[in-house]
Length: 399
Image 1 (cartoon, one colour):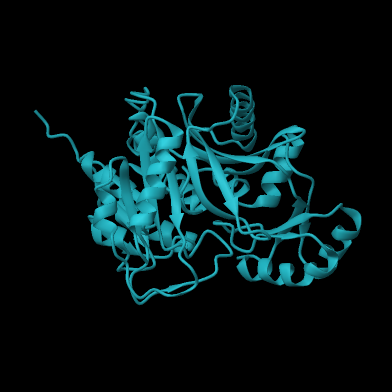
Image 2: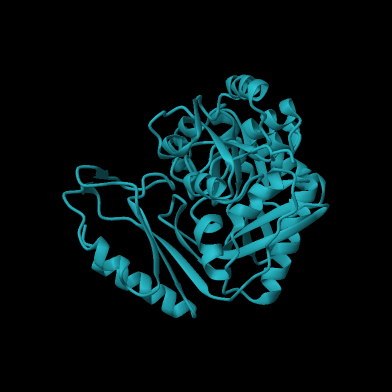
């Protein structure tokens, strides 16, 4: 009897948001190859084969993957929680692994290309314009009603995203967005009023399975900082169904035919509209913790099965709980001490407490989703209880 060959999975990114995927892959008996520019990143230390290369350097990553593949076959490639989908697609295409075409990854990353494609296909998106110069922006402000939102075309985590309420705010907003942009290309779009939803989906065997709809909590205007989310959504079933239908239509319009997708959708007075679609599972702990805690579904395991070319074995919901994730955002200053964490962990319903900072680090004024001190994730039978448990845990932690 021939011994079954051990399969190898390449995960692009070795940061904190990729660590759960790395752990799940290893628990599945896979050998895990991880690429990251930081050799000391937590995921790189967990990897069976760490390769030091930036997630954004597509050519170098493809070359490194080819070199590894020539001596030890790779069976799948993925990322989670970071916008490395073009790198993932390039590797998949180069090695003939399951994945989307590079051009699909490109229009799922570039916000102007995404908006144009969705608009052409009749998918509801906000009114928008590409912006390269301050003159482009000033023209848009004269011709589009305020408030408007400016953002980089090619970055994630709400970096450089800012609302413009008055014409005199344009210059500073432009420079902040430009600084956060990789290519220098920006987008200006109408501000959409309304509640915001976050959705995940797996795409396999010619079907799209939506795996969770959460209510996003966005604060810190004129910036857009996600301070947490609660899953499942508290929105009406009709609103959720319409949003899921729009999400699926957008996935098809972009051409995402295998893998995963995440969507941010705004519930406007004119119905749901797409804020953003990405060809990966969500970051912010939704796909890794809150959805699994609320449903009993190991979504990361299912996503890994898809990128290996397998059909997910277990997407049936086991139970219906509510899971709440909230960011830990202390006041601005130097963190002198963090106490009470172990006591908070003992509170019934507290599932995860994750710290990204420690004593000696600084807590800055947040202008994006980067720089949070940590997160508390709770689960309970009801929404109220999950939120109450979070509040008790957060009171217990003294920073």
